[in-house]
Length: 134
Image (cartoon, rainbow, N blue to C red; front, side, top):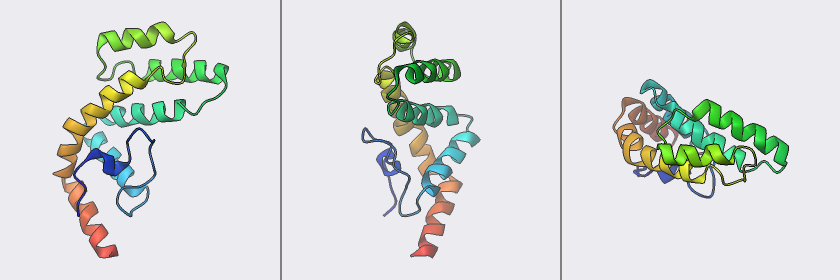
């Protein structure tokens, strides 16, 4: 059965797993390519950067990573209140300082980008390829 929710990409609170369907990393790569074609891959890249950020144990590395994420992705679809909350924590960011923004971006991908992806030619090609593997 074709996947009809973003959870098929394993973009859930448990973290990104490297597969969509049984195609391993292909699903994520195809979704990223689709987002790139719409000039919105920064949403997925931000989400992935946040997932990686949560794994950083050393505070000095976390501060550097938080500032990099903020500088690189501050322009994405995050409201000004959330952006300001992140900005205020950058000197001593905790592992969850991007959680609110990450949830907002996930919701945007789930409700906007992913439904369009399911209707795209690139997704249809992925399904055809998958059928060839079965």
